[in-house]
Image (cartoon, rainbow, N blue to C red; front, side, top):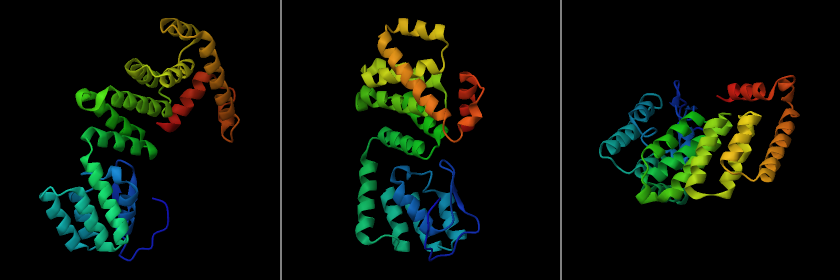
Length: 260
């Protein structure tokens, strides 16, 4: 966790590690900062026995720990538990605490799958791509079309494609985009699909796929040239020297290894 914290309580000898985003917290103030900035990630993966024990054993906040443990046993709304943490430290003025509480209450009223998508989106923000994919995959495996509609899952697929692309797993990204496109017929998603194809298909395969989907050849060529320009710019960056003398396939594989 970056930033400066004015800590009024002791710092933990053994930090509290939030595994799914890889952050270590050493004080109650750092915990408050995390909760304030990541309201969509507040759930049982944070508010659990591990945290309660850490507050008691590492920071000596036994009363707070006991209060939170009791609240968890009673299945109290997370907003109440978070508010108790902020009250303990006085980290936020009352108006901001109330605003945060209302945010949490609003989030808790959302459909569980909407909250799950929000969590996946936040994990992408932190660069936790595998964890984000797990959230998205869970959503797609348990679709509630009647409740949320096909558009919701088309957007999940599009977000999932973006994650795969960030990991340089272009075939999986293309599959997600095509499924999303078949759902909503979005021109934006279709163009994204066309842009991806030259990144993992050889020329023969690329032409076959354009034929299969009856693509506009001029449009496909324009998008491919855009890709080439973007890739050329990347190779001219400060770290572009690493790719000199490498084939396109080797360059992509190098990038894949760095990010996975």
